[in-house]
Length: 264
Image (cartoon, rainbow, N blue to C red; front, side):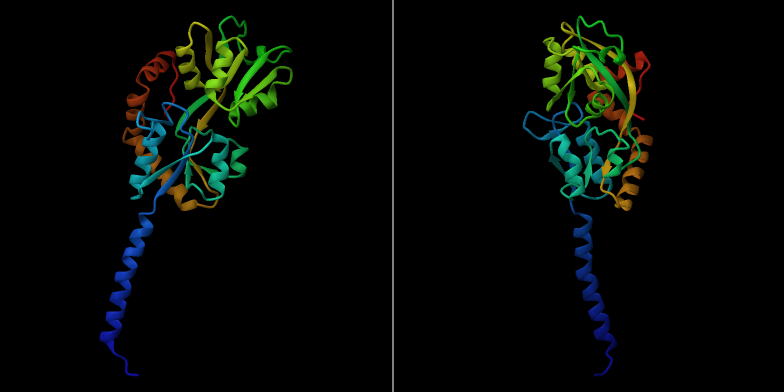
């Protein structure tokens, strides 16, 4: 068979034309982000039931920077890491603390938010810190799967630990005086105290400092690089400040007055 340069060129052109849509489709594959839509104002639903909040906006802006549509996968918090490891989601953006224990099974981006474990106490509690709670007869509420749960399990040997599935249930236990304290993050503790000032008080100084980061499946180094670059650019362009003003203006101002800052 004779060599036909024209035929070769036509074949190459057709191959390139077919490959281009495939590359475009691959680039446009949805970025599936797992989060539990039960933690306002970070992860929640709006009045029409659509995902909303700081983490949703952050995920949307991240996906846009990658040229991909975003899909928010609502998942119970203790199911997020299994969903990431099995490939059901590409990323976890769900107010998740980067811990050494979690890093054994998943990777994390650079941190984007600084927080810490604090205490919501029943109004008449005499406790002045976490050490005062590790006593016989004291009941401490925690949300299952959180760093507060982990801290209480590892450090409170005398107190009774109440492990609950929902933040609201733990707050109710304290508000009704059935639990002495609820261990949770700084911003949520502030909000829960504001909503229940008549029955609770708060110690907002963290007894354990933490950072939130994006969860990424192990070995996905290119996506990790892209996420870290996005977070750097987003911070430099004032993206986190805008999110704070949009969703947390009052708290942001109050934390500034108290000498706390949360967005890195």
